[in-house]
Image (cartoon, rainbow, N blue to C red; front, side, top):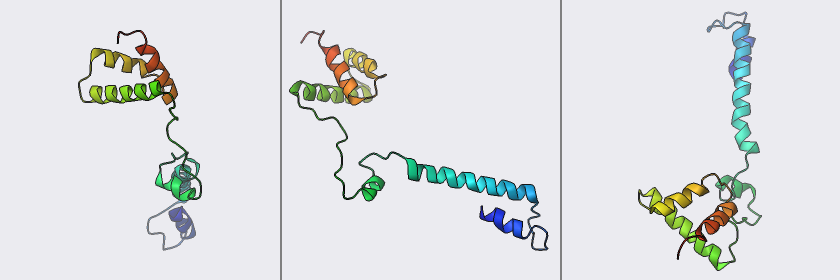
Length: 128
């Protein structure tokens, strides 16, 4: 933007050492405006997670909301641990075929609550 403004001021003078013409000025102004909008978009409109330092700086006086759902049922706590262990085992190149199959069924689910319920439901049919 600054380049466009400065070069429009010197366009018909001897100070126009870059030989700017009006199309160059318009391009500089548009490119500068686009960069300002894109740079500011993430800063001002992003939904930052509660553990982000920028979020914490803006909301220092507010309590930090929990990042995961509250687990009250002991079965949910156990299932959450099983999911974590299965994901760790598969990520390290191991894991049982059953773990890989159950994790593959969770892949399309995005919400933690949905993943937890699907894991619990998929474990009901197996022998303990």
